Image 1 (cartoon, rainbow, N blue to C red):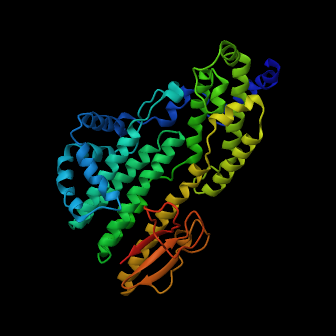
Image 2 (image 1 turned 90 degrees about the horizontal axis):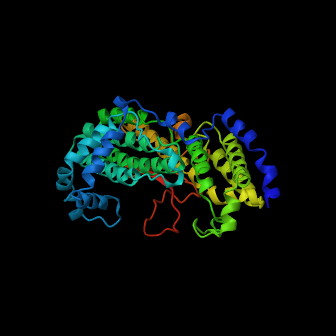
Image 3 (image 1 turned 135 degrees about the horizontal axis):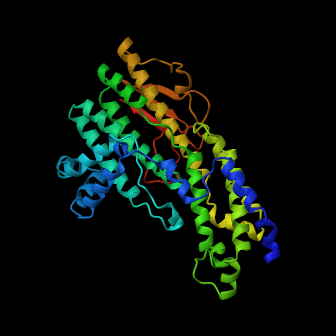
Length: 413
């Protein structure tokens, strides 16, 4: 058994040096510089204060009330409760807003915990961000569009904070939260199509959006975190979906040997280094990143050597995380194009009959062709064919039917 692992183990230092030469963090301590934010710019202390308030349980009912804004079954009576809920949440939201005014976020995490490191902030931040977006919608409905746009800007910054951790879960939370922000932003735009000053301000808001979620960067933390996990494996059962702690003495002796662990480390480093080399540095090339993820997964699945079991266990299916960036790119462009179309109406008195050429802004990232556009009544429908690359006529997502196809769209009435 040792001979099976020995040759691979002998290449470990070569792989370690190659990863470092590529700028890949291989030790937990090397992740801290990637997330460092000066105290004066750090939102994390504000989030800690909000988390402390949340532990009292005094605000849970208010968040549940505001959460109905994202339910397809929301009734008018539900929305009538929003102002009171927001008023009760004001001390908490003031801290969230202060966090949204900070450019960065560093939770000073103990990366050496590896797979035992928890990220409790993510679930709570999603709640806080939703509340901020409901506040933006309420401000907009009340005519205070300037305050509404400020709330949107803060919410988008908070979304960006979620992606500060260089791990895939942070990448996915950033994408999920920006989708929430975009949905509210699109609603607010629809409420102020007749206000030219709003259109100018809204264009400035979308221009302030932070960098796209960086899929390649998120893979960096997975390397250091995964290497911490290798010494924790004490049973071959985990490779078949089991869990550590159910091994016999022989398994533990074998898996805890330096030769076996170094062999696992070698294969793990090689897979991630190869993968990261294939992923484009530009987040806008998310389709190439998706193809790279699928290619890497096929190679890992095809290698049934014992040292590669570590990759089949620790290397999750990452193509969905890469592809998810496409939805963010699409909605940023849909919002930008929508605002330009509304501006045309202010300049000419009507929406254009055909979609003007706004360069890359008006090109559907999923098709490589212009967004679909048609006038409807006094407004218009603008849409992308979406990730399934099928034109569904601009049909919105049906939350009650997970099998129904849909497009990514903005409808202005």
